[in-house]
Each structure stands twice: as structure tokens, then as C-alpha cells.
Image (cartoon, rainbow, N blue to C red):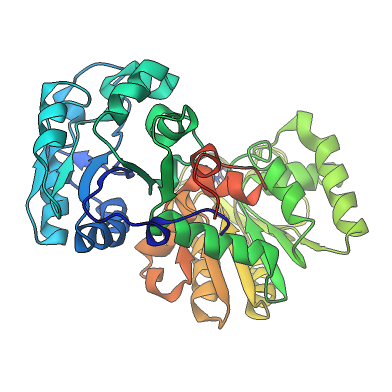
Length: 395
Ligand code: AMP
């Protein structure tokens, strides 16, 4: 990574504003998935171990610029305290008297979490005055929120971009995300296989384009696949399709040929006569009859996809192979997750639904890396510069 991290600077005694991603699901005041909080622990432990004064900030949900107790980060402060084994103080505002007092009183090795940044519209608007106030009393900016690194908001980029915090470095989580995904893209062990699925081709055009420059095999499943199959002249029945993207799909298939990338699409599908777990269902080879829709890949496709995975030395996966939320149409996604869990290769799961599937199936610790940012990892795989990274100090 060509950006400095917390390890490249002296943080002892410094007041650090650390942007973390504590955008966690909360039900009745209880955090139901603590993955993101756990993800930030190494950086925070590192900083307190060095005697830094740690001021954490994050967003949570979409409170639309107003204080709303439902979106308070207080439960995250308590949960983080359990992981750190030290009390995490909570400031009940972001730039108000509570935050000011916390910044003034914090001692080396202590941790304070500020209230939800998005209680201020200025956060997402990347407002300069807001950045200035947020930066007051701070010596060092640390960005460790990979999940929002593709956004240019006040706390994810602005405070450094505008020059209020001149020392701006990555936390250990962002450093790890960039090293693993960047390493796979720049110097992959081959064969390098990318697996893309999910709802829309249009969301992943840039990713496909960029990956076609790098991979040996591109596997496309999920609803996305039907736009490609239609472009190849297949009947796809009532399956999801982006009709305005079929020409582009043809171009991408052509590009794969030119680049000598193996492009694998479903050869059979599990189809249904309605979008429901309990609809009539059957396997269709090749064409899908009118009135039926593909909701998962079929058994022959599973065999072809998993065979390609078996030989791979690097795999990047983003997006489910079917409507995995329906038990009857989850087998394609499950089979891909299982195949990945068994290989001796660098396996990278690009956040979102595929990360959830791998975790639910109990394969999380079998993967090299599960990205903490769905949108950010997609933009990274697309080859785009993430504002939350671009604003950090070069090495
Ligand atoms: P994405 O956010 O683009 O990764 O899309 C994930 C969504 O795609 C999931 O909610 C899946 O249910 C949906 N999906 C995957 N395959 C299909 C399909 N064959 N038909 C309809 N939806 C699908």
C-alpha cells in the first residue's frame, strides 16, 4: 500500500480522530451483528497500546440529519468496551459541548466514541465548517472505515482533504483490505477466478470490465446472468433482465474472447413459475420457457462452476448465485461457498450478500478475507480511487 498507516507515524500522546464503521444492526437497543465493531478493535488496541488518545466517530443508519435516539451509537460504545476490556466513554453529541469536553479531558490510552455523525446533514454534504469543528483539538486523522471509504463525506475524507488534519493515515483494517484485495488484483496467484452474481449487471459493469483485464476465468451467476444469456440469443422466460444492457453484455462477452478469459455462464437453471420459495419449480437446461423465471443455477452449472473454483489459486467473489434468501433457491450460492471453503487458495469475499452467505454457512474462517465493505470493495475492484484512501498521506 502506498499510503501511510498508524504504524508509520508516532501516535504517542496524540489525540487521534478515528473514523470507524460502527454502522451495525440494532434491534431494541441490542446489537445483532458485531462484525464491524470487532473489525475496528485491532486499530483501537494498537493506538491505546501506544498511549494515543482515541476519539472515535462513525455513522449509524440514515437519521436524515436529526437527533434520533433510535440511531444513537451508545450501544456500540458499550459493546466496544467489552471487546477492549476498558471503558469506552460516550459523548452525547458530535461537535457540541459534550464532544468538546471529551476532547479536552481525554488522557493517553483512553477511548471516547462520539455520537452518530449523521445527526448532522453536514457530514454527508462534506461541509467545510463542519470538518473544521470536527477537527478541533485533534492531532491525527485515522481512517479505518473501509465500508464508507468510497464516500467523500466530512469524516471519511473532508477533514483531511480540506487540510484541517495534515497527518492522515489508514487504520489497520483499511490497510489489510487494501493489501489483500490490491495484492490479488496486482499480482494474483493463477489461475485467478472471479465470481460475480447478484441482481443487476448495471451495478457491476465497471467491475466486470476491470476484472476482464486481470482474471483467467470469469463466472457469472445470479439474476445478472440472464441479461448475458439473452444477449446470446437464449430464451430466458420471465427471468430478471436488463434489456437496455444486452448490447453491453455482448461487448463484455467479446472482450472476454479477446482477452482470452474463460467466461462461464449458467447452462441450466432452477426455475419457478412465480417469485416465491413455494412456487412450482423445476430444472431447465438451456432455454427457460415463457412464464418461468430462473431463481438459481442448476446442478450442471454448479458442477461447472465448482470445478473451475477447485483449480483456482486466487478467487474473488461478489454476489449470490440465486435468490438465496429463499431456501429452495439457495443451493447454488451454498455450493459456491462450500467449494471456496475447500480450496488451498487466496479467497476473497467482496462484502454484502456473499459475505453474509459465507458467514451464515459457517465458512467465514475458511476464507482468506471477507471484506467489510460491499460498495467500497466493488469500487476498489472496479479500479476506482476511493476518496477515503486518496485523502491519506502517501508513504
Ligand atoms: P446484489 O445486491 O446486486 O449483490 O444482489 C443481491 C440480490 O440478488 C439478492 O437479494 C438476490 O435475491 C438477488 N438475486 C440473485 N439471483 C437472482 C435471480 N435469479 N432472480 C432474482 N433475484 C436474484
